[in-house]
Length: 442
Image 1 (cartoon, rainbow, N blue to C red):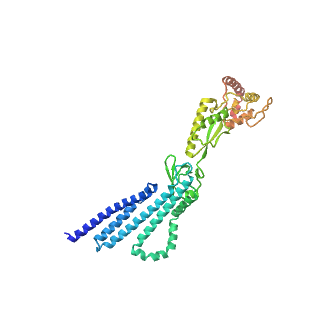
Image 2 (cartoon, one colour):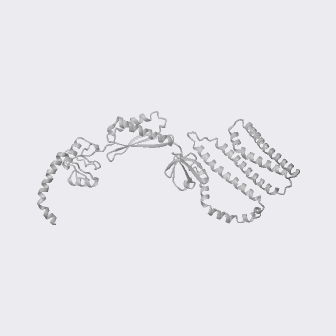
């Protein structure tokens, strides 16, 4: 059984340990009260307490426990390795506390720049730079702490001179081995201070639209519009082109395109656009344009340009304009709905007459030509009272043949013309029937 001295030693250690634990929480509480009293309900007091509470308690607890062991077991033979372990723990806890204090200063610095305002370009730049600086400082603190821990071992101190002597060669080998890692680290630092991208920037990368959520020393996190996360190395933003929609501001211009019939009234459509945008909160009032950009293929392409304060508002505004214009065309101007026109039963001679009649009426719209099949190029328009000028797809027989080859148009005959054509075909076949044996013989 253990003697009385052993029990007394254990009791002293237990009492000292309890005192150390109680003192840790008491001192931590007193420090929090002092900080709050000095700050007088300022925001930085809460930030400091949240950052430094547990590192500070860890330092006090490790130090109190070390003191308790030293008081309870002053001459124990196992003290040297235990003291070494507590020394390592104190170095690690101290590094944690120093890192948290620096992070508190960084948080205090960026708290002055709000991200939830309309014009937050400066705030995004400051947040991006502080993110990189914070990570750099934390990495340096960790490296120094690891170096201090290694120096507590006698064997490491003995080889320190030789390690320093071969530092040049080691750095070259390490640089070659970690080339990609170092490239990403330098790219991250370059991104932070060149302002190519910033936190909360709207970018388009790899065909994905999203916002910059986080920038680290080695990678960048982009959250897409559908809440997917895209992680890209920092070197991507220094070696490949990408779109940054908020580099110099968040305002953007977007387009809405509609394919409609030639009978559309663009003036009425402009009036409807004015009505849609009047009083609309999504519209910032900078750009409002309606233009006809194409008139080919039997349809007219109308492009509407509108502007908004940011990309999210612009997307909603474009959808709103598109929906309202489609609704207006369907209800108020049904004749402008896209249509396809097919010519039924027109022969080349009839086509020439139809063209002359269209010219006499002063038709200027391709849709006004009832004799042109869908997909066929417009006829060469003659002057009034004259025969049409020969062209590639004119009303001549050769022109019709070329038109059928290029457009693959299939003429459809009327019933009465079909009967007449059938009789004529029978007569032609009857006239040619005596020559069939000779043809087969050849």
